[in-house]
Length: 118
Ligand code: SF4
Ligand code: SF4
Image 1 (cartoon, rainbow, N blue to C red):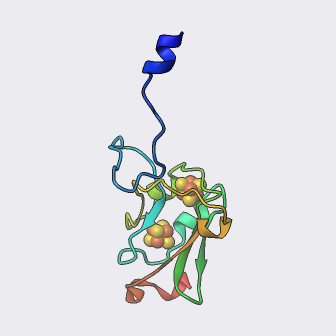
Image 2: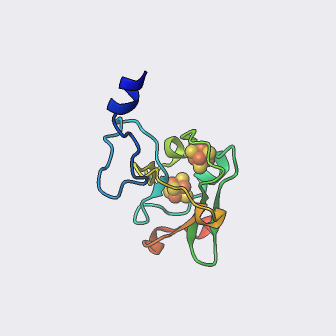
C-alpha cells in the first residue's frame, strides 16, 4: 500500500485544456452550428424540434438555438433541406451563466429568404 502511495502518477489535468484537442469519433455531436450562407429561415427545423429549442428572430433575421435544452436528437439536421444545420465538434460549454447557451445565427444571404418564411 505504501509503495502505491509513493509511486503513483499525478493524473490531475488542466480543464479546459487550451492546447490539446481530443480526437473525437466521426459521429460525435457537439453544439449545433448553422451555415448562415445556406440557411433561408424556412423554419422546418423549428417545427420538427421536440424540445422547442430553435426559434426565428424575425427582427434580426436570425436562427436562435438554446443549447441548454437541445437533446442532440438530430431531427433538425436530418430535416433541413439546405443542409445548413449540423453538429459541430465543439463541446466545451461549461458556464455559470445560462444565457450563454442561447446563440443567434444571423443569416447572411437574406436574398435567399422567401417572403412566406417571414
Ligand atoms: S437551418 Fe435549415 S431547416 Fe432550419 S431554417 Fe435554416 S434552412 Fe430551414
Ligand atoms: S438536435 Fe433535436 S433537440 Fe436539438 S435543436 Fe435539433 S431537433 Fe431540437
